[in-house]
Image (cartoon, rainbow, N blue to C red; front, side, top):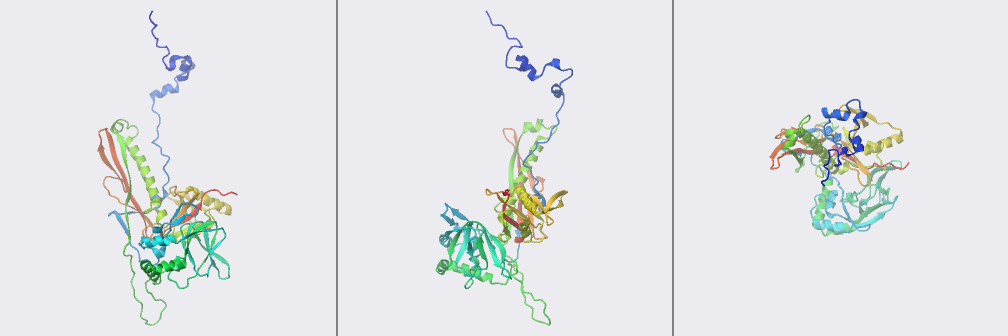
Length: 487
């Protein structure tokens, strides 16, 4: 006896296998007196948006930079001869609380050792430093006392003090991680400390005995020559910015013999080569042929790829070690917050370090931290109009968000101040226009062909860089605490 044939309504896993499934899938037709919306959608087309992307930001840095067309692919920044050598930051190798050593090669960041290439001598100097713990409130050195040691700050915050006209203490600066103290005494007879340095927090420093260093210099001719050349250079006439001076005379009467001279230039000016960000965009030919209504698939793919490239471009302009702002701002243009959070006093100090500051850039959380300090003081920051937007400002300078400025694991960030434009010897962006198959200024899209899988390939490239024309064109407020402090 054969099995009965399955009817169309028998159980086969479909929604129609039970009354409950039918009701869940399409509803009971007897409940409707007109066509349902679900059925009606089969005869219409839904309204669609273009593909959305969460990672798009305002990219204010790209908007605020004046862009210079670099036809040769390289941009040379010519400057006057600089006699006062800039100070950098040394780095350390730490393998425990008491095993801390300075990386010898980074000692060349100190002005007196800039350009020194004897690695063996640098290693010997590094080995002579000794670890020392400093408690909060301890005085590391006192003004007027002889210099007996040089110091490198491994971790912690110190404040420089000087004595005012009437004996009061005046704050003259902040010393933090990687800074050095004492090497400025090189070339002076019986050097003394010019400022008192006191620890604001518990700190760790590396100390180098001055007499020990002097004995090593005596038996190392190359190091002695390096320090002698540095001391001689510091004695040459220079202007307040450390550039080679031009002899001048003013207020004279009669016919005195005028001093003559010339404006000297750097013999090895810095050159910036254009960097790039690239990607290969792949689109299947079937998708490009058939699925282009109402939006062109290739154009939408290209639009989002370019947005991602521009985001990475701004990140590079901030963080790239070769030309990014965070790594190329002169040490003399870096200041630390006095108390941690960014206060109006800190922004005023950063603003006072240059003329014609055009913009402040900070992480959005850094801006929020600044506003909290303004609220505590009862201050209301103003606003200015920038490209049709009302944006917050301090002292008339727009305060713009830049999420590419990082926040460190210790919840600290930075605030960047810029003067922009070639005419003002500021910061400029670099690109080249007129490149083959240009899609946007400085960005091109080149068709690379169709492979054996019917995939079309497009090479998308953006060429760019950034140049700081003179050191005071950019400044950074460092160690900005962005976390909320307990009330």
